[in-house]
Length: 257
Image 1 (cartoon, rainbow, N blue to C red):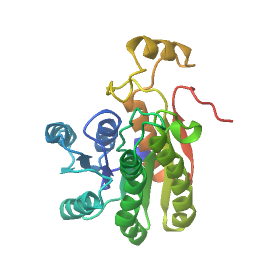
Image 2 (cartoon, rainbow, N blue to C red; image 1 turned 30 degrees about the horizontal axis):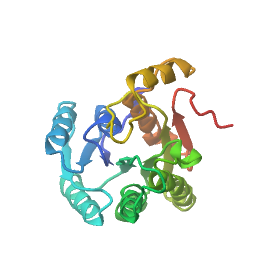
Image 3 (spheres, rainbow, N blue to C red; image 1 turned 180 degrees about the vertical axis):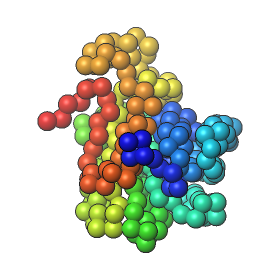
Image 4 (cartoon, rainbow, N blue to C red; image 1 turned 45 degrees about the vertical axis):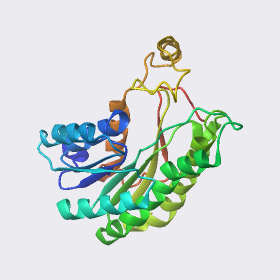
């Protein structure tokens, strides 16, 4: 049954994969036999460390630096992935950095930067890699979403707007790509036990995290590895009938009916 979750012979690309959720997804895919393409905006040391960990699991790893909201970065990712591994079978659009500003503080520059980083990046990824998946008649696309896309967020309006639109992009792509053996799904974390930037999450102190964990049905915060497992499940060959869906990996924090 272990072969049901094998990704051997596949190539997976994960944006924002130098740390936290993205790193965990890369290593989960690598452990299941996939070659991996790692992307982070600028921290080469982090990205290269992830690559070494993946290679220690017996797979190939490539690193491409750059902002995934910039189409030129996606073009470089495509060139490097195809040069090293032939094609990309799986991609996870994960890169995101929230701002912490209310509506009155948010500038036009903030608005466009965060829409590009999360929504436009996912569009660029689709335009770059769907044709190859279509030709192969197999592919897996995952967008890392979250509760902001459903609930909104006063202190992160561009982020929340991008996540809401990303949900619609997921469903739209799923409608048209299923006949080619390509699935498109969202994985939605809630509060995660992970490294946080205090400038973007000033409210998430250690005490708040402890209280949130105590209120979850599972009595702990989910980890990046929990998110990675959900991604691996969606990418498995036998998950081909799951598309346009959302897996909430939040410990029961948001129980949408």
